[in-house]
Image (tube, rainbow, N blue to C red; front, side, top):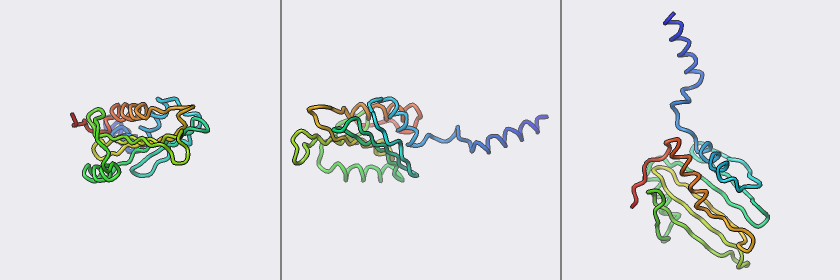
Length: 164
């Protein structure tokens, strides 16, 4: 009887491919973040590749944003990419992770704001880009960062942050 039970358990675990042992994908994290923010009227859905996921959203004719999460082979590769994208932009600290934010007015229309907020957690780089007409709408990119952070921590996907 014990052998039959053990064999049945092995078959079930093999069929499930030990999914309970595998960390969630970036797609899962971003899907939860999208649901948590609740500010998206027209989401195109989460798109994913092997080590990356993103979603784009349009909340109105004058506003939209993209949230992406990309895993690099190791922390050094992620940091190199993060630093390349950051350039000379000053760093701040977000839950112990290096973060930068760039705000710029759109060319040709002074009311359009382009915003990028990115942070690095281990081998992951998370980026939120937004464009909006500030006369009618304002995105708070930190809300999206918080939603991604909360989901990633809940699923133990990212290491503890180390910046002060």
